[in-house]
Length: 342
Length: 222
Picture 1 (cartoon, rainbow over the protein chains, first blue to last red):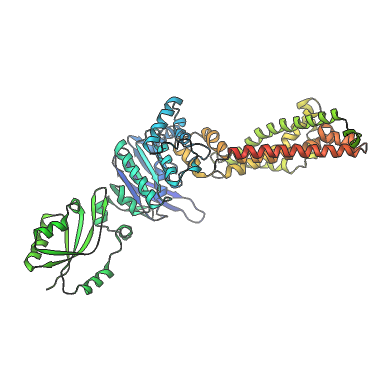
Picture 2 (cartoon, each protein chain N blue to C red; picture 1 turned 90 degrees about the vertical axis):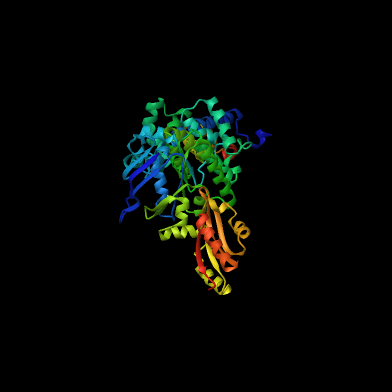
C-alpha cells in the first residue's frame, strides 16, 4: 500500500512562494490503477515526482510498502528508486542506445550480470510487443513504440509501483488506447500498482479503478471512477466528466421537448453491470411498448458501463407505467422523467 | 620537377617538420580532450541546478577558463616558459610546446564541452535518476555518450585551432611546419618553402576536419 500523509511542496520564487502540492493525504491500495487528473498547473506532475523524490517534499511523509521514502538517505533512496518504475510524456530514452540497450540500462544500474540482463531484456521486449525491433535506435521508432520501450525499461527491475507522468499525452488517440491496453495488461499480469497522471478523462475512464481530481495543489474529489462519473461534486470534476460524456445537454433537452411535444420522454441512467443486460430489447419484448432512442451515450469503465440514454416510450398508458416500474425496481438503471404526455 | 619548382625545399626537412606538427597536434589534442572534458563537466555539474551545484567551485573553474582563454597564445607560451622548463626540462622542441598547447586549447574546448552537455535533454538525466543511477553512472553512461557527436565536432574545431597554435609555437622554436616556414623560408627569403609549408598545413587541417566529420556523423543516431 502507498500511504501519503500531509505531503506538501513549496517552490521558492522571488516574490512569493508557490505551493504546488498542499497537504495531501492519500492511500493507494496494492494492485490498483490510480488516476490523478487535473488541468496543467494543478500540481499533479509535481505530486508524482514527489513520490520518488525527483522533487524533494517540503513536508509530509510517503510510505511505499513498508518503506518510508521520505526518511531514506541518498544511497537507500537510489535502491528504492530501482523498485519504482517511471514513464514520461516525452519518453526520455537515450538516443545513443538501441532499444535493447535502453531497456538494459536500469539493469546495468542495478548491477545485474550481463547474461541475466540479456535474458531479462528479451523477456521485456516480448512483454511490450517490440519483438524484431530490439536493435533499432529510438529515432527509428514511432511515438507508441518509444513509449513501449519506456514501459519495458520501467519494468526491468520488477518494480512494485509504476509512475506514469502524462504517459500518453504526446500520443495520438489510437496509440494512446494501445498503450493504455498495455498498461492494463501489465497491471493484471504483474499485479503492480500504477499511479497515472493525466489531463484526459478518457484515460481515467478507460483504465483506472480509482481517481483523484486535483486543483490548486489539493485533491478536491476522490473515489471509484464510476462513482465520480456518476456524481461529480466539484465543478472541475463535472468539466472533466463532460470531456467524455458530452455537455449537460440542457439546450438539447429543450429542443427535444419541443420536437416531441406531448410524448413521454425519460432519461435512463446506466451505472455498472445492468448496462450490459440488453435492457431496451428486454423491455420491448416484455411490455407492449415501442422505445425510441432520442439521444445518449454509454461508455465503458474498468468498473462497468456508465452513461445515459434519452428515450421516448410509446404505447398503452398502463404498459408504459409497468415498463418504467420494471426498470426502476428490477434493474440498477435510474429513471428520470423528463416529460409526460398527461 | 619538384626541385625546379621549389629549389630551396629539402624534402626530408619537410617530412621531419610535418611529423613534428602531427606529433604536437595529436599529443596536445589528447591532453586537451581529457582536460577539456574535465573542465566542461565541472562547469556543467556545478552550475545552478546542476547535479553538484556549487557556486564557489563554478566560479573558480569559470574564472580559470576565462582567464586562459583571454591570453593570446603567443604570450601564453612566453608566460609558461618557467613552468615548461620545470615540467619538460627544456624550452625548445616539440615536447616543450605541449604544456602551452594544452593549457591554451583546453579552456576553449572546455567551453565547447559545457555547451554540448547543456544540449542534453534534462528529461533523460531525470529518467536515469528515477532509475536510481549514481552521479558517476549518469556522467559516464548518459552525459558523455549522449553528447558524444557534439564533443567530437567540438574536438575537431579545437584540433584545427591547435594546428594554428603549433605553427605559432614553431616560430619561437618548437619545431614543426611553423618553425620550418619561419627559419628556412621567411628568414632566408625562400618563399617557395613558406608556400609549400602553407599547403601542407592546409591539407592537415582538411584531414582533421574530414575525420572529425565522419566520426561525429557515425556516432549521431538522432
